Length: 548
Image (cartoon, rainbow, N blue to C red; front, side, top):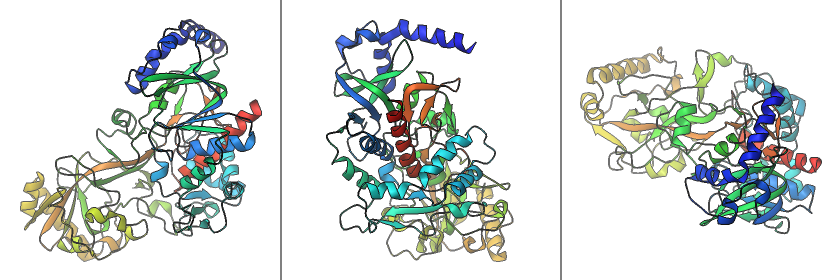
């Protein structure tokens, strides 16, 4: 049956040929870039290729740069074309907005066990994929040093290596980052990779403002033999003799895809603007299977202006200084959530611990994403404001380390003047401004204040040091919307970074790296996405060179 289906698919591709490419390109971006000669071709054989390379890499962030560098190192005779959808050569997805921290380790066997523990009961990610990842993780520092990084550029990041310290092999997880004070400007892994690529112009050609709109398959063997990208008003057909590597990130900027896979009618992407799922649609048209489409980082709530015109900067709210309520005026989860936290809980019971770990929270002893309501409110009092509940334009002072601490606000900030919220002399008045039931919010605040006095949040088990009463007017309410940091879902890949079809077979000469079809499916280890960009970029490059 499988062979019959494959033959049918081949026949369809052969019959359709290049005649489908114009429609594919339009469907990917909604634009109408043209190439009259090739758009009119009746078969793949009739395409007059505008450009030719050995390997086409789609996406210029950390994964794309790592792939291109690894290809150039493996075979300096290769001709690599690196396409970036946006205008910056540093990439316009999430890499450049990330902390730049890299998940590393020293013992591949222990890292492999830790990755399996993070995978939990999710059975769709094979051991072979995790083992390949683990073997690359332990080689990150050596690879970077081999590219010219120095011992002073890269430093260990104690306290950031282990996000799930309760797991038996969490001790194997380490983290490194580029020194933010590096005198040569190598303050982020993306900047370093960019500096390496700048020296490889003879091997790697980089183009910005060049979104991919389609891939081209050989009608005889289903191999991916090239792609189509936009260059201004023209569609450029580029032949790729050895393969295509998709490194084009997630779909956190596509509202409909987030509705379909994350169940958020509305949510805010926290980072880059170019990750709109183009690659997912393009690979889907080639029959790629998808995995981990519901996996993502984020899901906490962040402030949005009352008129919906603007989202707050990342970490503008310090959640240990108030509570979150829904449109019904009630608390609905353990509402000290921050963004993520690292605490040495080794040897303790994970099912009893708390906090937000890239959006994962304790729900009945399991660590899942809490489904935030489309609209929620962060409520606090004047003491909370004085202790940095709202930081306004000074959000950058609320770091990964200080977000869990009570810190006095040194700045003059006003959520009302900034358009993010309301202030009132009483809870009743505040409820009316928010549009929530007055009796519900007043009861919620009363129950909360009693819990603070008792030092015990019996409803949701917030830690005692975050039980701050809301009793000193004026009272504040800041409107919030769910925020998504990045998605992980995309085309299913194997241990060789090959993209697989619906039957589990590799689509010939099609590969992926990074968040585009990430391996993360259950618990996510911080710095794991950048680590995966480097790891599977190298794996994809090696696979291409080995396969010739």
